[in-house]
Amino acid sequence: MAIPWMKFYVADYLADTGHLNCEEHGIYLLAILHYWRTGKPLPSNCLANDKQLMMICRCRDEEMFKKGWETVSKLFELTDEGWSHKRIEEELQVARNKSEKMRVNGSIGGKKRKK
Image (tube, rainbow, N blue to C red; front, side):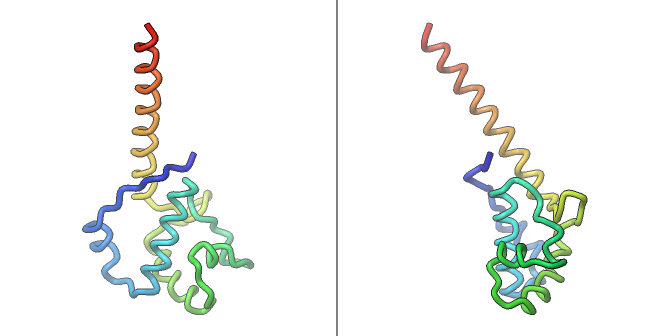
């Protein structure tokens, strides 16, 4: 289930990305937004023979993307599942827990009113 909202900690983002140039910021932001929307790591086989990650990051220039991803990828961890991001994983879990709690509380609240 996609979670339509995401907390964004501006101070943390700026502290973690002060070394990025404007193109790298675009790649990074679009990558983490895609990660959030899909709820899973970015595909790791992208750089081998297709342009999937490049399309996710909306890059049209392959050389610019490769150079940018070289820097941005250091903010991710390559795992068996793909390019994982510790903070996004943590925030996804918090959001899923909150969403589930609201779902359960909503169903309980509805049952109480029926009595």
